[in-house]
Image (cartoon, rainbow, N blue to C red; front, top):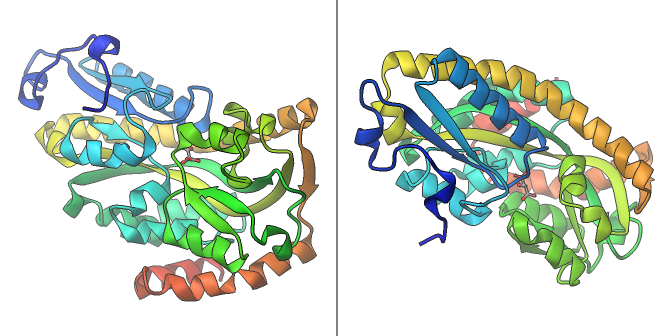
Amino acid sequence: GFGFSWQFNNGPIGNDDEQIGLGRQTIIRFSFVVAENTPKGLAAQKFAQLVKEKTNDTIKVELFPNGTLYNEPDEVGALQKGSIQMIAPSFSNISEVVPEWMVMDLPFIFQNDEDVAKAFQGKIGNILMRQLEPKGIVGLGFWANSFQQMTSNRGTLAHPEDFRDLKFRILPSKIIESQFRQLNAKTVPIPFNQVYRSMESGQVDGGENSISNIYSKKLYQVQKYLTISNHAYLGYGVLVNKVFWDKLSAEQQKTINEAMQEATVWANQNAIEINRKQWNELQRIGQMNVHILSKEERNEWQQALKPVYEEAQSYISKELMDAVYELRR
Ligand code: LMR
């Protein structure tokens, strides 16, 4: 088993059929690895509140933050099996089941938050969402965290040479592996709840993450150097088990979709705000040496990382790569 206990869950327990009867409360158990006070944690709370209001409490979204139910490597499998009804993993974690989601890990794919919104709402988003259903998953939306920053313990990361021979914690994604390979760095995939320890113990020298994750998991205590690089993007697909979804009534599905849309608009704006606030907070704490990547340095990184795009063509369809290049026009 996964070692979780039912003590958190006061709702009806049993198979899905029992949970979706007339006059009974339908329970959606929603598991995620980050803390409550994060873009994803707050989005999940907003969604749960909206579902409660819109369904007069006939559907209840139960939240399980901090990976208390499932850790990163187990989450998607648990969703596919129906052990959990809802998750919101990072793009890289989804790419383990649908490799094309790796497209979102391409370095420098997005210039700004408008690009990200375009990808979520446009062709890129559509292509990614439609690939989930054959895997037993229904995608309800995209949630933002923010651009990712580089951290290390071994010195400032300003130029591509600065990465040589350092070891980085990564999410599982061939694109991310390739990114660090081009920089002559080593990588090891490590689940989110072990990242702090891996940095503290020196198992890894560095990592990449959003300000929100660096702040909320106190990675600033175990990483001396921070480069504001905005080189990659961290975001989430909000996913539901398809068997569970198909058993809901059309009315229930419609209401959940409405709640999701409303929560998403709020959440994706809030994500930008949270990262901004926590960036100020990190500077106030002042425990990391901060380097802000210059325009010239950004160019150097982009040049060094060009081969990642060539490699990406073997994992990502032409249709999807074309949609990426369209963003730039
Ligand atoms: C990470 O593992 O760094 C992120 O995927 C965690 C998260 O869900 O934001």
